[in-house]
Length: 332
Ligand SMILES: NC(=O)c1ccc[n+]([C@@H]2O[C@H](COP(=O)([O-])OP(=O)(O)OC[C@H]3O[C@@H](n4cnc5c(N)ncnc54)[C@H](O)[C@@H]3O)[C@@H](O)[C@H]2O)c1
Image 1 (tube, rainbow, N blue to C red):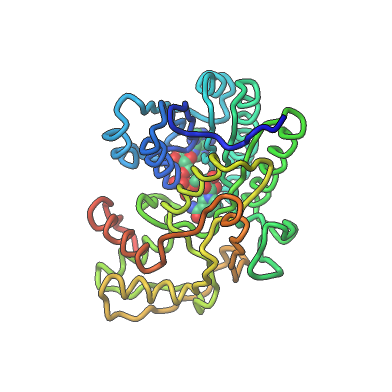
Image 2: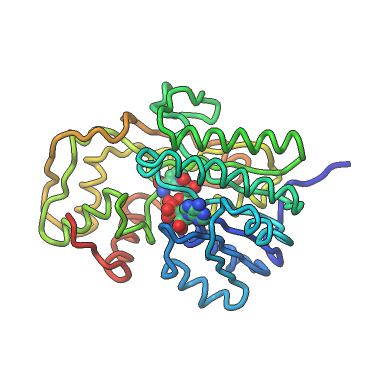
């Protein structure tokens, strides 16, 4: 007997953990567009915001249910997951918060993910799509980096937790036949990025500075590169991973384009029609990853996913959203 591991999403009941966050809320939008019967968001609102779900509320009506709660609450998770067909698991802390509060990170990323997986098995969920990260590679040794690259260069708690999450899912696939796909996102940006939080991304700081007539500030020489991917492309990858006839596997989700921090600042200045030039400040020890460039051929081959939004259009989209929807923070 052959069984398909591809799951339809129309008329299905879906759980999105972290669904009020940046990426999760875009996944929710696409699921409602795809005619999901019900989309349940489970979010503790540590970073998530109801504003991120405004479009989903308008489009989804009573097909959208928002539950405020923690993924590390087994009774609640069991309750919420009962009757669910597909789980998109996105709830997590940011890498910087994991470094500052490793115990909270353990409870959230590791125990919380275990709780979601355990409940998914008990509820006979058909497939789990989970959010992993390029952080599992640390500073890679080969570029473009493929999914076969080892995880031993990672030295962050966040990356370790993400690698363990992938391992947990593999083990539950082996023990219980749980179907899953893990997606390793590279450097995500786009509308609904957190503008207020302590861990706000550099792009938000730069937009604030440029709009005040101040040059974007780069810590260090700006030569470090990243592989930027727009949040809507990430959300699309999530839906394709659910539908594709694949299980027990991981995919890089990136654009396979290397952009330096300096190049990013220049691109943002161009999109914001500014003549300013980026200025440099002293290097700050944030993490040791100086280069990211993904091989994304596996996702293209197996999921039919390729990125559709280039950096310039994506930054334009981010700036438009930020100008209209976000409340610029005061800090610079
Ligand atoms: N943004 C990136 O660059 C990036 C890169 C790689 C991987 N990821 C992963 O993608 C996923 C989504 O990231 P994002 O950028 O949307 O982050 P986000 O912070 O915007 O969203 C995460 C959501 O999870 C919620 N949450 C956190 N802990 C929770 C808990 N214990 N219980 C319930 N809800 C909880 C938060 O309130 C938030 O709404 C995460 O798993 C993240 O690790 C993000």
